[in-house]
Image (cartoon, rainbow, N blue to C red):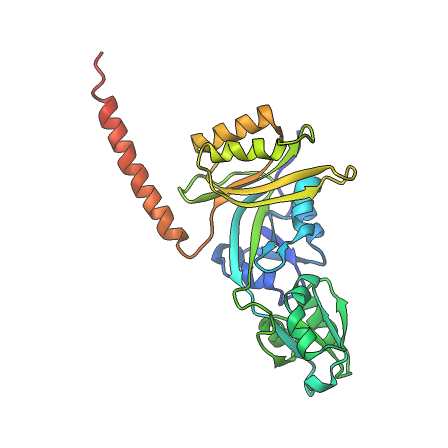
Length: 315
């Protein structure tokens, strides 16, 4: 029998070092903030620690509103681990140019940051530091940590304001992201467990086609359209088994406990391809709590209506 009890219970792993956006997002969740934190040097390591039962949960960035999916996260979930999403967390992203005390913008020759952060500031960098060398780091906080340990004032980092406080750096320029409506979606994952339906939920899965034939994607999408299920994300990814071999990553509104969702997935599994279920979990958003309360009230009214009808059945 496989032991699914983590050797380090009540722990959560996430990308370090201290001061990352991942840490910032995690601290918006009071219950996660109270857990024991394990910081790692890469997202695959975060997810592997959960798989190996070294920690209870993993927390990682999945998608950015400007740069799209964080491929390393979704590929690890799709192909390398067997984990279930427990919740999603969405935060606004503010990027800053940080430097050692005394650094001047005119002196900058090198910029270090996480590749996704660099991509989100491409326009600003081109306009303000067109000749600077760009280098990748393991995370935004890792970039801040690196430059805090050097004495030259020609190297800077793109990182959150929190990292400036953690590593004793100056903010040379604030809000250097190219688009103000910049948000990142994070997911909490565990080895097992599907949160109960709240009435305002999201489901994630991967569909592997049984055959690459004309209309195969259309057939899958028709299963959702026929049931008025709202797809919120659809993305194709190579299966790493040869050119032209792709799978589909999908997010949609609803919960596996909903009859209409269960029926849709059953038909896809029977007719179109193999499903890898990644989880059903509460959907994030500003109106999330209100929508869940409305769904709960509507469910109670509907249940009372149905119970009243069934009570009228004669023996």
